[in-house]
Length: 201
Image (cartoon, rainbow, N blue to C red; front, side, top):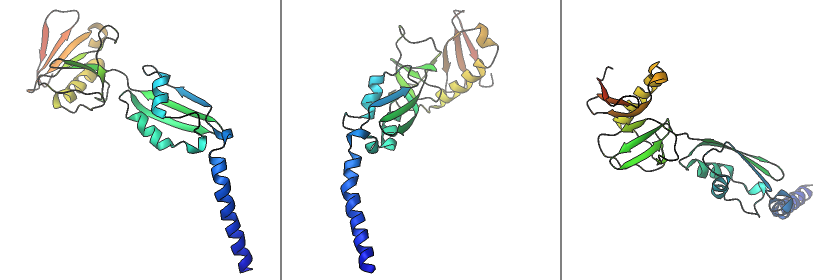
């Protein structure tokens, strides 16, 4: 009986070793459909490039955690959900970061989302009108970096207060400068002068 059990175990291991590569790389399981949703700024081609799927890739070979990590390293992608559906489908649900304001530092103007993540350079002709925050001290801004300067965090707090107030319905904010002392300098599109507020508002 012991010999029979050992023989069965060896036969089973040999069978799995033989069959697994055939199933793992079988043409029946090659990825034929990639369904991508949630794109507004990014293109399908950009996402496909980041996924790195070839014509020979099968559903078994998809490394979803690694693919997801590669996608979320893109400055414009906030989160992503990947789901494989056997035998031949991959579903990609993307949540993009949206421009919240423009950070101006020295000669740089960069779009930033609501979490302070730098997206890319601001292009006035194609980008929506969003408030400008001017940093009094020059900082190098690169896509993907998260801004944690005290002035930036203070500007976010002030913008949230402004957007929740009735002022936001009648006054369109053009720029906001937060000085190291805590004083904020506001400029609205309707008026040619600045409004200075102390740290306590």
